[in-house]
Amino acid sequence: MTDLAASRLESSKVVQPALIDVVRGIPESCYRRSTSRGIFYVARDLVIYAALVYALITVDAWWAVPLLWLAAGVSISGIFVIGHDASHNALFESKRLNALVAKVAMLPSAHVESAWDFGHNRVHHGHTVKQGMDFVWHPATAAEWGEMGRWARLRHRFEWSWLGAGLYYGRNVWWNKMMRFSTEGKLGGKIARERRVMSLFLLLAAAAVGFAGWHSHGSVLGIAWMIVKVAVVPWALFTWMIGFVVYVQHVNQDIRWYPRREWSKFSGQMEGTTNLRIPRVLNFFLHNIFVHVPHHVDMRIPFYRLPQAMRFIEAGFPGVAITKKLRLRDYFSTTSDCKLYDFEAGAWSRYPTKAEAA
Image (tube, rainbow, N blue to C red; front, top):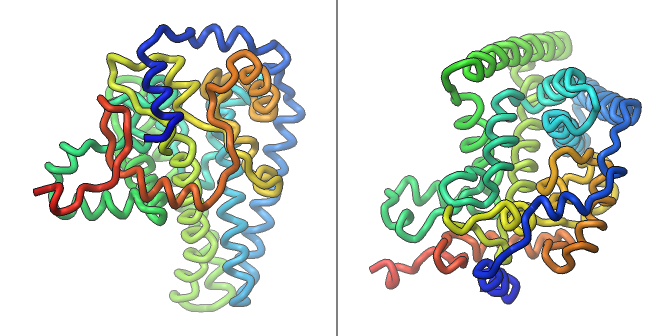
């Protein structure tokens, strides 16, 4: 357990401030939304993505395609962040415009907005780092590890490795909580309708890309290659990127996950995530998604006001939020050390050795 994690464990035993006290310290200027500014970001990101799709259709040079794949994956991530902001009703004053942009911006990443709204906006934000509730990168305990079969352990080892972020997110969040998710009532009907519309859109888009493949190569293999090149690989890269982003935001040695009886809104939103400094070229696409504490404190803050809001939070509650530079060596260290979690002790651990398991 790190010194910060130990101090947080001790601080959890005393009376904490209420989250509303943090919100009250954020000035009104941090909530101002500009319709023109929001539309500019939406249009800019969509134009960049369209240009990259065109390039992937027309370019076949072996050295250029991997670079275009990486750029397209990052571009989809940026559009997704725009959709994420609109889904929170933070991008525009108009709820209708937010809803429209959220649905459109989530199409390149094949996300059903209404399912995302339920799982992310309500469950994840409502119960951040709470045991049994926050399903995003929820840790397993040593007892749960002991009950896992061979296949489940193998899958856990890979998904919680430095390479496994895409598989974890794709299986647990995208597939289980979105594509397979169903519920009753109006919400269930809405999710089912939006999933059908999205599936039709993706089918038509695949047909258009496949036609381009036939036009360029004149073969079924050419059609398949074009779909893989233009759609499948960039989506797979996006899935790994978003899995990585969510992981580093909510899992490290200093972040404590809480049993339900000890969890509070303050600890969940102020201590359950991080602010990570990234290169400006990445932030051009990722729209302050790594300035994550103020977003969890109040989802209504538009992404371009998050750094301003964070300055007020740090002034009012110094030393509470984790703020540091995003470094790959820290990621490798975290994926090595943070395998299982003891909710009572508030500490991460590695997998038990064979001797310990015996």
